[in-house]
Length: 289
Image 1 (cartoon, rainbow, N blue to C red):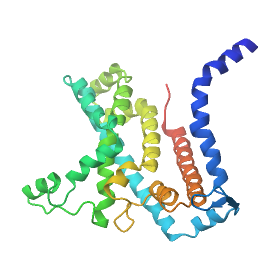
Image 2: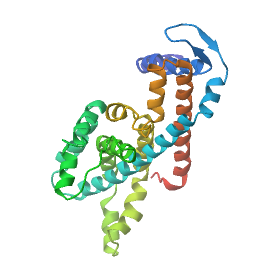
Image 3: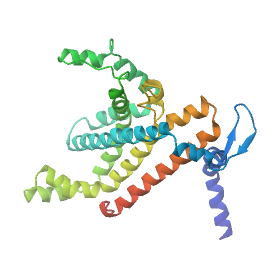
Image 4: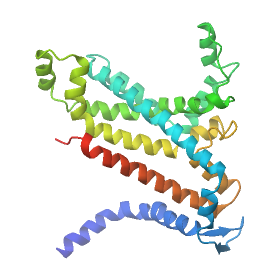
């Protein structure tokens, strides 16, 4: 028994070692720093208790970042899941080209956020960008996508959905492969239409996969950084200044390590709370087996 337990820990060691070095230790250090204030380029840390958290709670700028993050999450997670489901259903029903389109939708996922953002930076250019050119050809005046506070956050959300949607498509396609064909055939013989079969047959069986991609999409939206950094830098007028980007600026531009660490702890708590809410809602709506 002891030998088996020692062997199990030995086999887990290659995974536990990097997790400890790059996840658990930095997380513990961030928690410790959140109760301290440090001077730039100095090792000295002064214990301030909950002062950093008090400053966060009383900061209008930080609450603006919370609002921007929630809006960004809604504008990315919801369209990404809905569009991915529509694409997955179309590919699952289509007899030809499934492998080609699966690869095509997965390609944006394989490139870095910075590279994807550079592509959209050219597309969003108000004078030379192809997006505004296409709108003008259709008779519409294209907006200043990244310079207008009304359009900046939706513009970044569109770029994010384009990059991340393929991940959801692949998992939903895998989930659809587990839907028994005989159930759909029986429902079809009973006169059920497409939407009736989708609601009563496909979605209940697909619910575990939908739950998984929902949790992952929400977490990814909360943590999005690269596209915001490249496309808007948190502007204009702070409309795309999300929690992660505000944390980055305070940590690596303003060198307020303690204050940024408090933001990291709060962000972790928010993601944990959002995930817990989704798990609680899933108890009634997700069907396993």
